[in-house]
Image 1 (cartoon, rainbow, N blue to C red):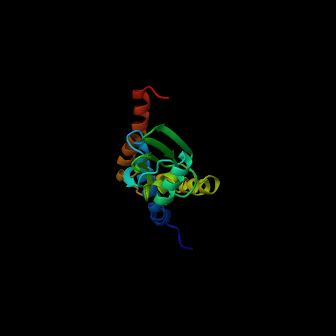
Image 2: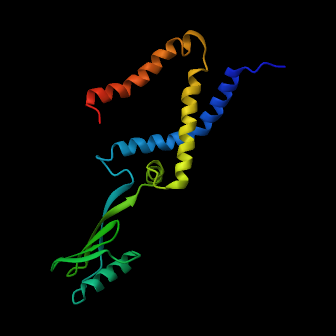
Length: 187
């Protein structure tokens, strides 16, 4: 009966699980970098401004002006709010945009947010906005990462393995978050 070479089996499993985890790791890493800097920018949406011309629309009600502007700009759905700021400014607010309409000239200043192509979806997954179904995928990914981390400890034997210089790197990896908690004052 052939003896199983457990390190060879561990390396094969580590390789295959590692390849499987690459896609998820890239998504989580890029999203993590983006979300870590949420105070500096909105990682899910990009701000934009645009100008449009309707032509004068005086003599109409505020709601009629808002509907005309939406129709001409191809905006679907109802406005959240229509507010007359002055004779020359009617603010029409939608979920991710606001139109500043001058009814006398028909000039519109539009400001809003457009979703960032990749990061919005990656952040949605990373922050578990997909709820229950995605939680199972994220949990399975966490288990795979635990396997990769612990399995990697035993793949190499001798002075380059866990009982040699590997222990130094494991301790260094554990010391980084521990030192941060101590130096920052902790939670």
